[in-house]
Amino acid sequence: MADNIKSSKDWLELTQLTQGRPVVVERVRLAEKDIAIEGCFELPQLARLAMDDQIFIIAFVRSHGSIKEMERVFGVSYPTIKSRLTRIADSLEFVETNPTPSKADILSRLQQGEITAEDAIREMEALK
Figure 1 (cartoon, one colour):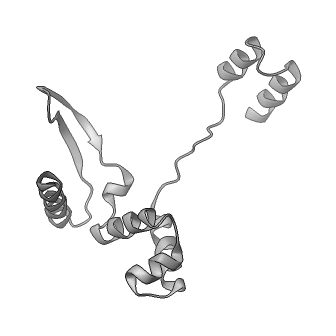
Figure 2 (cartoon, one colour; figure 1 turned 90 degrees about the horizontal axis):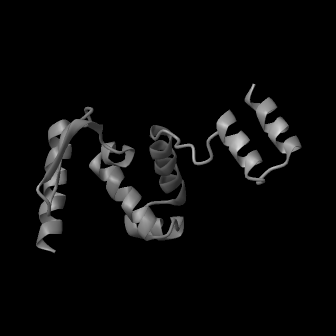
């Protein structure tokens, strides 16, 4: 519990220090191992949000997406919750969860019998 509080305070301090400016992480250390990874890593999108927006998103997830619950927690109206969700969503880049398959993927699926030759042709034509 104490580690979580310290971590939250550290994160709040980092957020205040950076004031929304881009942050690049250059070294990552695994806390319980003697391993460090160096490179150039961007923070995840949610970590780049302002602290109050992060808190809002955490509350939204904890309320299972219930806007009615969010109204109760924050003491604001439905349009206010929707407006804030829209603003935050607009600031996030969409992550494609179903990317367009490559020609190699299509041919592999055809070879494994997962799709027919007609399906493969149709998918190949869609790539053009």
